[in-house]
Image (cartoon, rainbow, N blue to C red; front, side, top):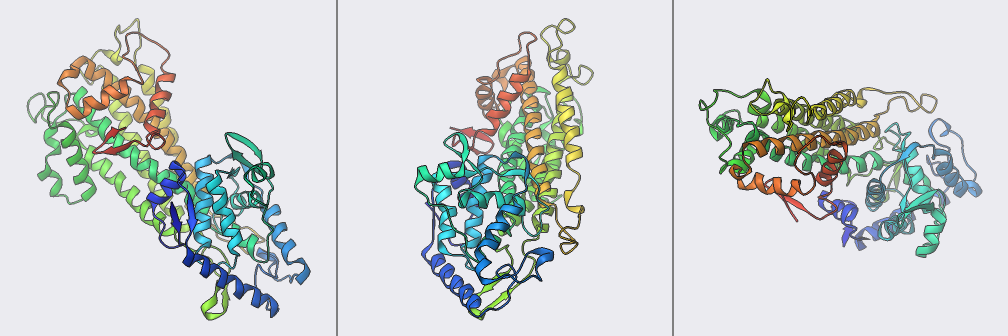
Length: 506
């Protein structure tokens, strides 16, 4: 059980709720703060003070006062009118993360909502009722307005949800779970949709998968080194210590650990003096990739415990402040930065694929084919990898440098952070297919060198991967092999596998 205080949620806890279906509960201390905060809002309404989003319109319409009898309708109209998302839906994992993160943000007790609203979010998480949220339509400032409006629809029994493997009307799922639709009160619609939970939810999933991707990249690169009889001397600790980047030092150490008992790697001067950069510079490149991931983690960990709506209600001072905590710039930058790490991990992987299949760059059969000429072997796998890497280069363009004014120029600078996060996740999926192709080629190369000469750790990984993709004995349709292996690399979350030193443990 994960307890939501609004301030202490960890990435590990998010992972447990989102991927392992662990249940969540609101902390008693948070319930007290939420109730007190709501009392402040109701007192302000009674005093007929003019407060943005409570008794005014929104955005450019904030100067229009709303009659007391219309305050609840104002919130309902807001949710319906702002549900303008388009495109395919986010995954159920991302939708689930959005519910959890929004509940945690509101649990801090600065948003003026009732306990019933926060509980409704938690109830949907625990019942695995996941709102259908279109991926496109957010500018990443004023909050993720369109995505979170679709999320909010499910709370009031409107829109659609994913429920028990089906896409159904929200009302149907709520009835089956015995959850009454929420009736929004003053301030609550705005509190639901002013926030960065769409981009942050995508960011969380991207971060968790990127961390695993880099670990797998290191292990697959180590297997490629065996297939190409690479020089292990370039991974000597002294070499990396003098540069001082800890991530580089760590990658070199892990690769040395993977390969310490390999009979397929070589020492400097045995076969050649130096390897190509895609082999020799694995620690330098992947170490830098890790730096982008670590930066993203730092910002995501802050954001999942942040209060990001507007206005905020401070009960202790009996004041309401309109500000801009909904602006997604910190997450936009973090997601654009992690995109560079993802792109380069795939980029250097594709260069190793080329070294594995190109007969001018190695002494292996041309394109790892059992019968070169008559059969093409892995020739076109490298084409696919190159295509994916090229696509990633276009997606790596920073979304955060763009801004288009909205709401009649009241909201004249936006982050585009949700676009950055979506592109990062798309790039990660591309990168996973690239390293899957490298793994297929690396396994073929070590077949020719002698599997029995592999290091114990890389051989263990090889044997597991061979259960997914068999040896290439003749040309076949390779697309299913790539997809199966990519899915296998991804599925360690769902199968509760974890990696220690880069090895899967079931």
